[in-house]
Image 1 (cartoon, rainbow, N blue to C red):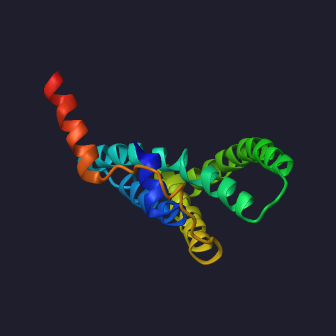
Image 2 (image 1 turned 90 degrees about the horizontal axis):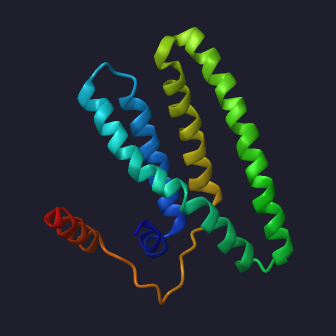
Length: 154
């Protein structure tokens, strides 16, 4: 359901929303408040849907818009998996040092900083792109209506 919303509202905009949500999540996780942690987990469900939708579709659309060879797209996608794995290892090492120096909230502080940097880069470097114009995008009202009918079934 999130894909058509991303296509309709723009992938750059959706990536900025993702970053803002991640900053909020990492900020909420720093405080000893159960309601904040629960809210962070709920918001995390939304942000992870964006994470797995927005970035790859933005790359594919930009690649094709600039008329690069399709074979290069395969290389980019393959390399992105390797880079993501190496980045995850590096992030774990950095999180460990942040936890040593700032305590258990250190990795979340690092998350706020690194996501803020990503947000600024996306804001100033990315061009906006959208999905196909004939996509039947769901509105928030449609999604909530489906959610309500799903709850009524159970």
